[in-house]
Image 1: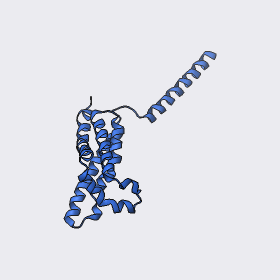
Image 2: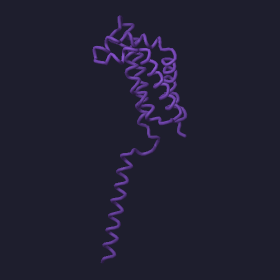
Image 3: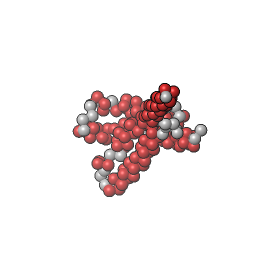
Image 4: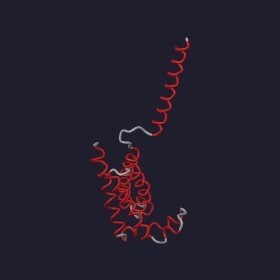
Amino acid sequence: MSLNSVIARPLLAAPFIADGLDAALKPKRHVDKVERIKPTLAKIGVPSVVTDSPELLTRALGAVTTLSAVGLALGKKPRTAALTLAVVSVPTMLARNPIWTAQSKVERKEMTGRLLGSAGLLGGLLTASGDRGGRPSLAWRARNGLDQRRALREQKAALKESLAS
């Protein structure tokens, strides 16, 4: 087992597990943040069906976050889990840190700091989603297979030519 799978993935997953459980089991605090940005969501064209039931949306995102983070921590489809967390975390981090609504420089600075921390976690998730654990990519394996078949055909043709002469 690599250091990455033993230590790094569970550490990366830990805040998402805690936050996902909190959102799924106690959505009130999270719902307030969704309510705060509802006008912005309407302006950018998010369908009202998504924002009509913020508690249900919060619980669903919390469940998806928790399950994906547990999968990442345990190494069960870690690339898919990390990518799912990355996709879910973008709207979540914007909802939690709506810099455009800040009323003061202090509030804007606090939100910016939290947003940058969330962006750092997003970077970790994107890195984890691309980690193949030392295994070659599908594209490399396909090219390598084609190269090997081509080399075998060339060897076979050279052998036939040498036997014919």
